Length: 376
Image (cartoon, one colour):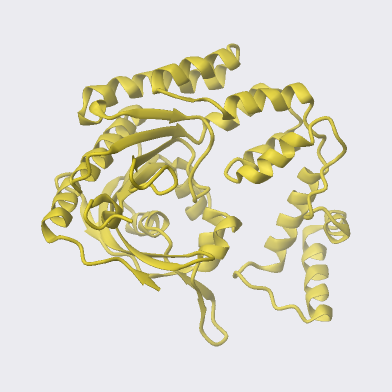
């Protein structure tokens, strides 16, 4: 397990102060989080980067990979309509080469109403100022919007199952690229589409779950991840249905490639995206919101930052549905942001079974990267 070096106290306090000035309530969610919940919210692609634990006969849990979902659960449990929550603590990630425990300082903000554009701009400015407090002089902003790609896909008038598949693939570039490459070809050869999935799809939900449990028993398989047979059967059926959807036409694939390659200064990027689908009302509305968002960002401290808008969806976590912001360092490179955050309005509804809602967004700084003397 790689641990970060000891951080200079004055720089650490400067980063912390940016969040303290918001007046947010400081919280410390549990280190252990339900594995099934994390996978449902963040996506299966994150599984290989989690530290998974299980007590004898107990539910599988994992060391928290981030703070967003745990803090959102605390907010929902409080019953409050709105609230700002700051935090400081360790998160845990694994990879093929190393395992890390890293310090994060951040904030999560929840409200029932209000100006979302203004809230987004304020978050960008807060994350930028906290990042600058680390002392680096080579920082820049990378902006994006997880909702733009679904809005663009909608403008193409695709089969519903195909549109859903593309949206689901958005955070997995290699799979999306493979989908684009097979444009004009036969049905997908997605490995999730198989005999078992088709059999399950022909049965009522209760019988599908029972059949899956019987297959497990006969094969000696013990399921992991905390999901029930019914949940797994439903997921297999959905993936089978989307896998059998028609492929893209070559023209549709080219249109998506053109969207994904838009990467420019924010104002220029918005103009490029607008020209790709001038009659798409949903996309144009989001772009108009971005013009207002940039007005506010440019009028604040973050307006002095060198900034790029990247249309390609980014982020390890699948729950972002709006603004995505990252702070980059020239020395660390584009794949190692020292701060990140975004909007996730849909997360509260998913956590509460549909009872949530309102505005939800947050951002964090990794002091170990933000502080020039220790960043790696």
